[in-house]
Image (cartoon, rainbow, N blue to C red; front, side):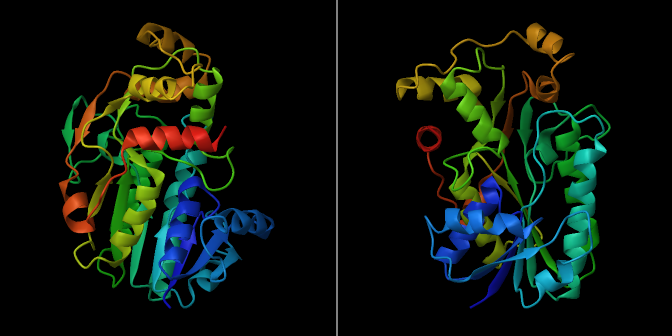
Length: 326
């Protein structure tokens, strides 16, 4: 039984990754900032997978303590942990420091423990931020010299740091770049940004929707792709775009919800001038502004070819996510 370390196991994607690994017969060790969170995470995961081979270690992305012990005996690492907030922080380093320093800390410990391969959860925000409408692939990078927001900048800088850190080492690196992630959460309904946004939409707390269109992906697919990236021989050294090739309008999401009986989901688009004005006062709206009106499409062909991806229909993801959080 091979052992896999999952960082950020308490998160929306992390719980799904752990559950998928356990169902595949792996031993899973999850990192938590406090062991007080372990019981709730085990209980949540136990609803969808046997947890006999699940354990936890205390480790923080901003501290060296615990990482060497966490890696012991692990063949693979899924580095999922990284904060995701559209809300712009007072200081961008609140997001950048744990993303970049934490990634380097995890990779250095993995190299020391002679881990075979590390799979990093990045984002399409590391590919398209600061770009105009167009088609982008794994070779593209976001422009950190532009005003792209702290989250996109953190993901771009963290991924670039990861590729630099593994260069010349025996540690194999594979990166998953998800788009906007939807689908039912396993555990807490309060933590993930997209879960909170879905809850607001179906509760009528979002009166209008932004003029945004994004590549989207089901959270369960993201977990499966992490495992495929961990084990496929042709995956090492590659970035895999995990989202629909064509962007999906937020208005499409709310239309699916209304058709499914969630009548409070908004129907009207917010005028861009209004969002720009609101961005002066609302940090979450300000975080959206770099992506308003942009419609990036993606070359995700290698995700299908190498990782043998069979995507879940996004309409199914939206409806099952809404059902899970109501």
